[in-house]
Amino acid sequence: MAIRHKLGYPPYYFTIGLTLSHKNENFLIKKSYEVQQFLRENLSGDIGMLGPTPKHIARTHNLYHYQILLKYRKEERLDHVLNRLLDWSQEVDQKELRFIIDNEPQNLM
Image (cartoon, rainbow, N blue to C red; front, side, top):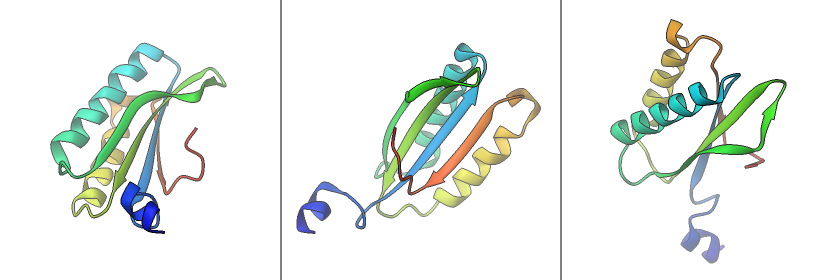
């Protein structure tokens, strides 16, 4: 367990997976980087962020999929920021954009 703590693995750190999907890959890439920028502006520098990157299986059912992985110990504003992202994903400009938040994802691929 000491190794898991030193390397920042669960149960000492927590993860959240964000998945964005859309039929147009260029639109999806643009929106993924907008989400990344929003997270960087609104969360502390203590949170680790990987991505955005294509998912392991990057396209299914005519949709492209990109992911962002967040790793944190304590993050006071996280719930508020994720709720704002959910609200953003429902705006008219994000038509047909699918946005999924997976708390403690079992599969990172």
